[in-house]
Each structure stands twice: as C-alpha cells, then as structure tokens.
Amino acid sequence: MAKELTQRSENYSQWYQDLVIKADLAENSAVRGCMVIKPYGYAIWEKMQAELDRMFKETGHQNAYFPLFIPKSFFSREADHVEGFAKECAVVTHYRLKNDEQNGGIVVDPDAKLEEELIIRPTSETIIWNTYRNWIHSHRDLPLLINQWANVVRWEMRTRLFLRTAEFLWQEGHTAHATREEAIEETIKMLGVYSDFAENFMAIPVIKGVKTENERFAGAVDTYSIEALMQDGKALQSGTSHFLGQNFAKAFDVKFTGKEGREEYVWSTSWGVSTRLMGALVMAHSDDNGLVLPPKLAPIQVVIVPIYKKTEQLEKISERVSSLVSDLKAKGISVKFDDNDNKKPGWKFAEYELKGVPVRLAIGPRDIENGTVEISRRDTLQKEIIPIDGCVEYIENLLTEIQKGIYRKALDFRTENTRSADSWDEFKDLIQNKGGFVLAHWDGTSETENKIKEETKATIRCIPLVNIQEQGKCIYTGKPSKQRVLFAVAY
Image (cartoon, rainbow, N blue to C red):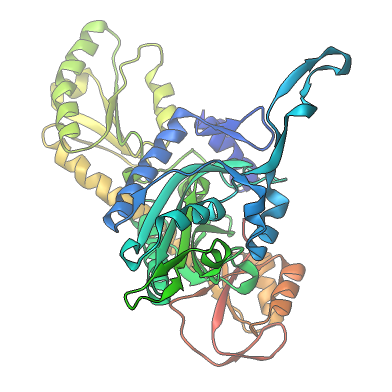
C-alpha cells in the first residue's frame, strides 16, 4: 500500500494528494472544489476539535450557532470587509425549482426570486454583530466571549484537499469588550491558545507575529497569525487572531452604557482555525511510507496485530491480549486489537503504517510462550522485543517520547531552514534555491512588499512578536529598517 505513494523528492504536491486519499483522510466530491472528509480523517479532526473546544472553554468562551445565510446588505456596512470577500462569495438568489420540460427539465423558478439575495457565509462577522446589537446594552453584558463551530464557503478557483477548498470546516471566535486594551489582550491570548495547540498537540513549531497591512484580514485593525514551515520549505498560515477595533460595532451600531453612564461603541475581536490544520499535520510530519501522527491526535494510538495460523492460536493470543487492551484503555490510550482474519498480517502492517498509527504491537504463539511482544514505533520505524508484563507503562512512556520526538524533528527542520538575508541577491538565491523562512529587513511600505512578491512569489508571513530590534537596510530599496520580518513562499 505505502509503496504506491509518490515519493516526496519526486513530486511533493502529488505525494500530499496521494497520501490524503490513500490514508482515507478525504477525497474530492462531485461538487467542484469541495471534499468529502472520510471517517478516519474526521476522527482526527474530532480530536483537534475536542482539544481546542476544551481550551476555549477554559479561557471563558461559550459556543453558539449563527445562520449559514447572511443578507447581502449586511456586507455593505463595512467597506473593507465586503471588498475583501466579494470575489469569493456564493450568492443565493432563488428559493425554488420547477420542472420545465421545454427548457431541459428542472430549472430555477423565476417567480421564486428572493427579495434580498443571501450570501452563504464566508465568515460571520456581519451576522454576528447584527445579533450582538440585541445582546449588548450595558457594561454588565461585557465581555461577551462567543465561539462558533461551523462550515463556511469561499469560492476558491484553485483547490487542494484540506488546504484550500470551496467549503471547509472551522471555528470562529467573536468577542466584544468594553475597552481597546481588553480586546487587544483577548486577541493576543487566543493567538497563544493556537500556538499552544499547534506545538503541544500537533507537534508543529510555529512563529507568532503580526501581519502587514497587505496581509491583514478584511475589516481588521490588526491581524496576528501563527506561521508553520512544511517539509517542502513553504510556509502555511495555521491560525489567525484579529483585533477589529470598533469597526463592526460602528457598522452595526453596537453600543453599551459604561459605568459612568456614557454610551460607547464596543471593541471587538475575531479568531479562527480550520480543517487547513489537517493539511498542516500531514505535510509537517509524514514520510514516504505514509502518515506520521502525533499520539495526542491519533484516532488509534496503539494497534495490536495477532500472528497466527490456527484458530486455537488466535484464541490463546486473544485471551492473553484481553487484559492488555483493558489496561491500556484504563490509561486513556486508544487501542485496537485487529483480529480480522480477512487480511494478512503483512497487509495490516502496511495499512497501519500508512495511516500513521504511532505504536504497533505484533504477538504470535512464540511470544505467548516467551511472554514477549514485538513493538514498533511509527515515527522512526524501529522495532524491539519487550516483556509483555509491564509493557503498558512502557507504551505510555513511548507515546510521550514519540510526541516529543516528532516535535523536536519538526523544530530542527525549521531551525535548519530559517536563514537571514542582507542583500537582494542573497534573498533571491535563498528563496529560489533553498526555500524555508528568510529573515530580512523591509522598509515598511506596501509598494516594496508587492514588488518583492511579484519578483520572487515570497510574501511577508508576519512581523515576529519575538523580534530583536536592529538597524539595517531594506533588501529591496536600501532604505532604513529597525527589524527583520519573516519572508517565505506560502500555500
């Protein structure tokens, strides 16, 4: 099975596409640009969702749900917002079909035209802030900390499974605050939640930073992001948190009465991550044999494969393994005993390797006699024989070691592929021939940023929050600069 994958060195893009499909994560649907997330892929997303949901609730947020359809007039209230999303919007104009055999069968009923066209949500700021106007009246109603798990539609022309699809799943937080300072604090806090999740659960090191004006979310005052580096040297924006100022409050007339009795507009934020994280998980860790999943997000953390020829042998193995399975589950470890006799052990080994199961145990009649089990770890493909007694603790420690090891490997890769450039020629050489992150001086203008992008396809991923101030010259114009920014070619 795994041998059917295109090798990364041959065609990284095709390798990714092959792996997503062959590992049963997702497939293309009959609807252009949309995907079907298969049970195994959705199980990973559910684990991501569960951890993030826990983290959101621990920081005081509550879940709610808002309509999929947004009146078109709402978008016109915030000029930058409508301009930013206008080209990606799917619009509902009619609400009924009819059978018209003269014109080819089922057609849109021209008499069923909507009085106001509806936008299928590309994001929910407008519908939510129209709702918040009814919820917020006094300082006692603040802060309002709401998150929504939903799907959105952005009519992408060039799509790729998980990374960029016309419809995708995500969460979007939308919060309201009494002061500018509180809103900014919320924006940075949620960026930290995303960073924590990426590093401690996805095992992906990320750089936190603020976006340039060119890369800012439509309607935001400031956009912050976490940026990750994939194995092909391209960057992937993996989460964003936006300080919206009072823009949407003013657009939808959302005011509150302060403690002094004065009426003021509220301050707001929005923040979100999507199923794009699934793409990041695949590209950051996997290899030419298949997926490599961090144990904390693996649907199956341990699989046990019996090796036998006779039914009596399977019965003895099953009896011996029964307590092991129970003990592992008692530790909160997800385990599968695969006694399906329709598949040979070699086929099972290849399948679980392809699907990235972190730990695989193989046990046969000789192991029962010797009181041992063969254990194989997916990240390094190393195997060893250990006593079956006491192996629960061993596996528990091994899963922790694998989680840390996968992160270390990704961090080492990023370190090796983060370089500095002090001249335009050096910058071009690094971007074109090395890839990865490039730290370089920039004069702070959108004009220069656009020219660099036109000539190299590299964009400013962010201005890192942890950033040493240093005097320098812009690599493109030679004008003064006080700090380096993070460049990369990105997905």
